[in-house]
Image (cartoon, rainbow, N blue to C red):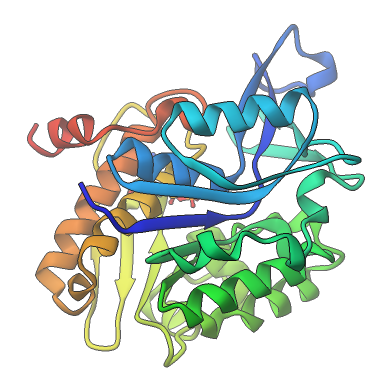
Length: 320
Ligand code: ADP
């Protein structure tokens, strides 16, 4: 589809997901190993739609790290930005599926390899070649990966990339809610595009109202596009000149993991071809309809990566 490179920066890990809900992993009759990590999901979402994607981040030099690197490769994601830490293990997440459908996570981060990525290890050549640089990982939380994260953003921006930020709030990993809010908002103004979920909007504004007023309270003049994803209610968009909402598709949802990554990945695929979409409301709405279709399809299968759609799957939902 396009030749512009989208570099997604952050963590990749394995979720251990019980086969039944309502019990902890320890009590479950079995579990699945689901590769994930929002930035890695976004890279695969882009590649599956035919875009050019690279993942930049650190894995453990262990069985899991090599398995994850293999999954990126199989999916056509450039792995030039992958590093293997010789000492620490790959990050793992142990999931509990609550009876109400929500997920609870316990992380192995003791420290995990992703947390040890340092600024001097970054593949700057790869980052400089990005037309779009996407980030939004838990690597803002601790050093040295926090400095690596900030440096990568700076280098990408200097090289002229469009910066896309998804806070991916994982509140239990932060020392406090206050710190999470402060750190997330401290890098808000450097992004061109920010995508938040309704839950993140509530957290960041400190209000349970999800409306234009609360979204616009997060607006920053440096932003080009602010997106709020609303699950089965679709999404809202805000630019300097216009705002509105685009309805979701009705599908048989079985697992919403990765819907937001699929949504943003598809949007970036279109923007890397043509940034002027951001100035044209009709075209932006069309692209967001496509992104909603990607998100919807992702909810129809278990897991994130296996559920990310190809372009033809999206087109068949759009033309139904
Ligand atoms: P996140 O994964 O970041 O929380 P959402 O769950 O809001 O993001 O999903 C992103 C997009 O995927 C939504 O804007 C919507 O278009 C689509 N989507 C998510 N859940 C559903 C659903 N249950 N039915 C239809 N579309 C959905």
